Length: 393
Image (tube, rainbow, N blue to C red):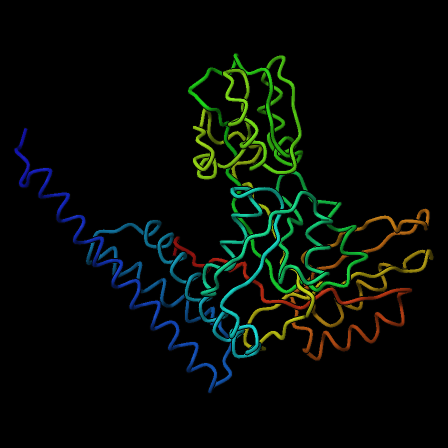
């Protein structure tokens, strides 16, 4: 057995030095990304250049493998994160130019569901993390309270979960959007990492009561089905469930929530990765009283709600309009119209800028085909798709 060249302390010292260098270089690269955004103001080029990103990634993989013995998967995963950060920074800069009144507000009041540590709370911090905005946090007990808090001007923004990859659409939120005067001004998708939390390291078979929000209960149904004689108790959020377990401080109660948030309440994870799907994500929307202007250089989404006549093929006619103008639909959701039996309101997410010729032409035709049509908002698409590259070549 060969003796190590360095002592453990020397190795750790060197690793710390290298980590510091990496942080400095990442900071410098981020600043250069901002300079790229400034140059694009003059040229009006879009934020994303797929060909340039592919060439960059291919070059990095080749260089990393030949010069530094780094494998392609490692390089790809690392630079996907770096490219995503660069895109979001550039988008934020261009959005501030398009909405100067927002960039002058260093403080934002944000309404979210549940107490601190809820997934909505985490999503609000993630959304504003690149916007150099200090948050004034406003906890709400119900989705309708979030809407009301923003409508009355007590909060600048509200953040609402709209759909989950495991449990599907959150119908209550869709129903509220049908009647509010608020606009969708942003979106963010958050990885949901459910785990079982308790005040001490207890065994699964000792749990008698499990607290959480109904959505995590649904998203972890397969795991919960394997537990025996456990009573499920619903709370207004995962954070409130964790708070409840902390207050009870009993060896037979647990909560479903996020491990990082659990630390806020003195809880420890008993079992990780308990969701039905390993890739469990929730999409959140940000709502405000005033619509935002979206820079034409930024990938945008437009969300519509509409109702059609009860005649056969009415919805198909509307969808054919979108197809004719080459507009990609990413979401179609139907909800009943209260007071109008058997009639439905359709919610449609479109990958298109509201000011584009195709979108404006579509809206003119859709207005003629529908009984009701409203634009809920046009907003930057904050979900940055990974740069695609065929590594088998």
